[in-house]
Length: 286
Ligand code: ADP
Ligand code: MG
Image 1 (cartoon, rainbow, N blue to C red):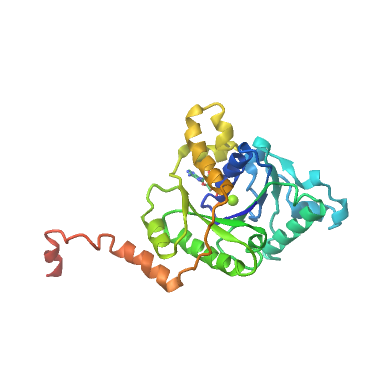
Image 2: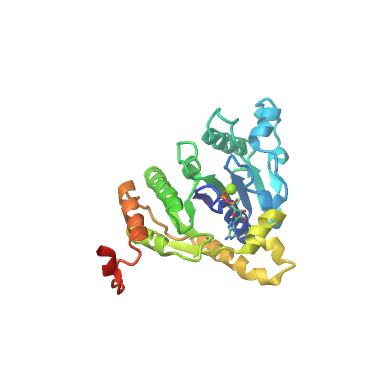
């Protein structure tokens, strides 16, 4: 199974990816996580250090693919999850998406691409240019991480459009949304009401998750010494179990930008549309 985790920058993709990878490994899967964000910290909490990127390694070997060995680019992380970082192009030069293509090409040449039960791509989704959409060419399921705010849902809607487009040429489905760092889900619910898709899980803001990033460890690793955190692990295990049950998923139909603006802004401007005006409102009209 190949998974592509998308979402706006900083929304929590890597945190979810690392913990979900472990959750899938705990369920007996052989997992490879590929960081495709130029930030190249996708696998940081699995390995506790910034591993060399594919692009660093290729540059060091003068792009001689035949000189690259699996151990140069694939690192073992916590929970038996294998880790790769694609890396980014030099600032202002090249395209991040090209890097994703090179990464898959190299992994195929190393015969590593078909060796895993699950490959999870952790991908930036602010701009879904051709290159960043590349993992969708390999994925069976796309997962989108969002919070309950406009920007993340706007990015989600752009990703939805890419999924619809890619699903025309191969068997890609949207598994659903994962709400992150939010207690509220009114805007998420409003969005899925108009653009139907499953909501797999909604995680609140959890201080221990923030701390886990600073410590360079996943929640699963921290739970070894703090049993209270098993509750948090259950969020990720739940997502893993849903994916392993081979859900049908959806081919979504994105909203027009205008539609999305009015849907979510309406809600911002008139959050109490259906509520009777309070006594005293009349004074405002004088
Ligand atoms: P992305 O990969 O989308 O750029 P990250 O996974 O790196 O985002 O998360 C950004 C920051 O938010 C990190 O410091 C992470 O620890 C924190 N974070 C993610 N999810 C949560 C959560 N549910 N509660 C609290 N902090 C979170
Ligand atoms: Mg990330």
